[in-house]
Structures are given as structure tokens and as C-alpha cells.
Length: 280
Image (cartoon, rainbow, N blue to C red; front, top):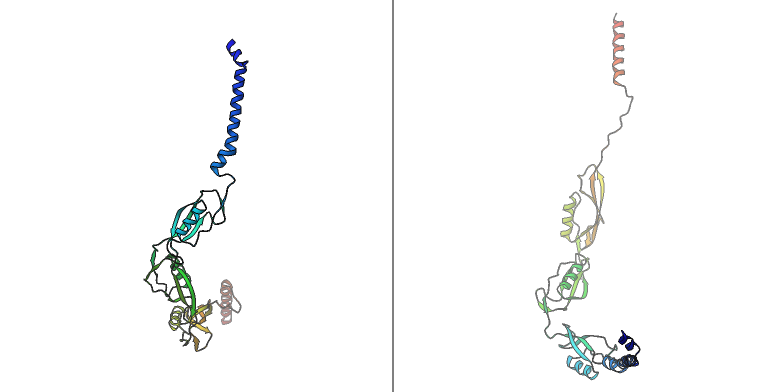
């Protein structure tokens, strides 16, 4: 036990402990002041240059001159730029980064993906837009022309079935719902609603409103009248129809005095007795 006591009271031990503590503090100071800042480039920053919309070769030279690296993150097709042009970068331009930082580039591909143009003629404008976008194409100019049915595609700028680059623009000509000719309104009075709608559709006219009125003479769902009553209308115009419905008949209330059945029988018996007395 004496040696432990001697060790704890030894000046040499405390000298070594003091020396190790100072060495550790000095090492932390050196690491924090010189080594780590030199390794992490502390307090050093570079402004990322804008390398979009230039060729990959030019972008590589600019990034190397700034002390930066690059990596191609993605390749996409864009018809507005030549092949191997930079479409996007990350981090973006004017962003502050450390030296030797890697810049990720999106490059325009040399091989452009293609797709087949769908047939959207006679579709509604909304359905045609969805169909075109589903094929990787885009809708361009939409022009309106006279036609029977409103918002219906009449023509498309690229023929259906053609193979084109993805993101190709398709222009559409759409019907405004008003034809440029007058059509004679067919006689639909007395027809059923289904027959009248079919006849009007074949004539290039449409039905905008249907009102029902009770009728005793006509069968249910029969055309009673129409508005407007003109003999000729512009192609694509709409009509309002008045259609018959079942007429609810009600029993007329009985008039006069109601005589209960028992009172009626009693009255008949009295009359019979009176008649016998008169005969006697």
C-alpha cells in the first residue's frame, strides 16, 4: 500500500498528467485552427457560374477554371437546343459553394425519343388535350371555325399515325358550335322525345331545354311545341322543347242529397203500407 501512496504524492505523475493535458489542448487548437480549415476549405467560397444553355464542352472548361467538378445527373430531350447542351444545373448559378464542389448537370440528349400522333379529330377539346399530353406531345395554337358541335376538334396540324419527337406541338382547329348556313327545322310536333332529338341532331340542331306539361290528348313524352318557332335556324343552334306528361284525372265530387241505405229501405216500407191502406 505504500507504493500507491508514494505514486499519488509523486511530482513526476502530476508532471506527466499536466504535460498530456497541454499536449491535447495544443492538438485541438492546431486541428481547429489550421488542419480542419485547410481540409474543409473553411471560410472559402466560390460563386457557381451559370453553365446552362451552353455546350457540355464549354461547361467543363468553365467549371474547371473555377476549381469545380461536374457530373451528368440526367439526360433529357429538348427540341430548342442542340445535343449535349446543358439544360439545368444544381446547385444553381450564383450559389456559394466550397472549392472542388461537384456540380450536377442535366444535358440535352442526342437521341430524341419519339411517339405516334393520336387521332383527336371529332373529340371534345378537353379530351383531345388530355390525349395529346398522354402521348408526350403538347397542344399549340387553338383556332375556332364554324361547325355543328361546340368545342369539337375539326382538324389537327400533324396527321394521326405520324411518328414525331416527344414534345412536338400539335395545333388544333375547333368548332365554335355555330354553322355558317341556315337549315330548315324539321317538323317534330307529335314525335316522341327520342325521335325528335334524333331528327334535330341529323339536321344539325341541338336541344338546350326540355319542359314537361300535362296533356290529356297526347301520349306521354310527345313533343307539344318548340321554341323558337322559326322555320329556319342557323346550323348548330339550340331549341327548347315542351314535352307531354301523364295527366292526373280526378273523380268529380258527387252532388245532391245522400240517403243512407237503411233510411231508403224504411222509406220504401212506409210507402208500401200507405198504399195498402188506400186500397182498402
